[in-house]
Length: 300
Ligand code: NAD
Image 1: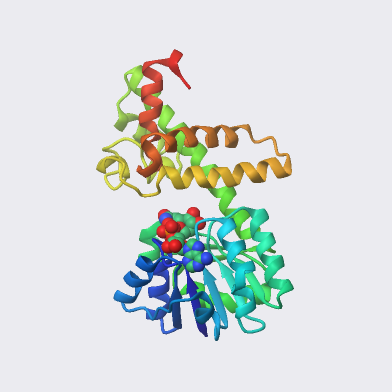
Image 2: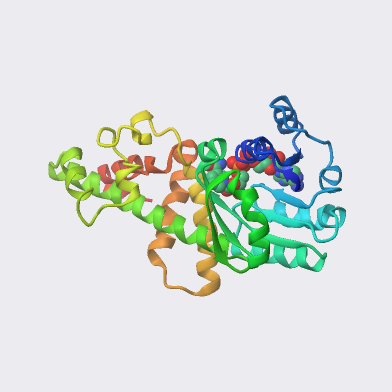
């Protein structure tokens, strides 16, 4: 398969390299000259225009930041420049609504399409251990699976158009809410005189057990590999969690679901990302909870 890989940023560059290393004919493009240069320096064949990249592609993979960028690129010539019947796979994290719009545009232009957002972060992209959540038809999923497997460890077909993004948004809403409440429990324990280790030993073996506690533990000590042990260097940055919760809030508004905890998590992560948390791991929200607890009346 000849693959055009567009969006050679933090995630896209290592994904494109892994695809090429797995033996696929990959050609890369990014609107940023710096991104093109650094991928070229790493050995990836890179071209200077999107049209050149997709001209002979059977698969067009995009890894941009936003839904707007995906839709603008699709409408701005990408779909028109690709051979008929090309398989468009968008791996960006975007709203369910934008993903469905992108599917509609691709279909109307005579192409096939999948939404395939990932989890696993830059480390997962570099080590080819990403998890892909895929939305689209069975046939298109079957065609894409060998390719996605070259850059990931788990590839799950979640259903029709947009349902990969739906799975990503739902998972990250669970993650955000559980990370917040784990942090609140540690701060509450501190105020009650309970040691971090004692709370960890109990909760990690009891019904409070969850990934936010046992892998991404927000206090240093109990889980030596968690970001709390390295000044909350990400990991998964607070700004990205705030972005994903914004997409969850869009989906909540559209569907009318009574998801008050999810919306509160969005508000808290927005405040965290607007402050020092933008570049910190999202477990660093414990510092905001601690300082809010020092001055409960001063909560924003
Ligand atoms: P990034 O900003 O590093 O990379 C995006 C790249 O897309 C940029 O280099 C940009 O120049 C390029 N781009 C934008 N429009 C383009 C166009 N029309 N044509 C070609 N290139 C274009 O972002 P990232 O960290 O790689 O994240 C990409 C996506 O993956 C985002 O949607 C993000 O939410 C999601 N994601 C990121 C992480 C992470 O840890 N970074 C984890 C999971 C999911």
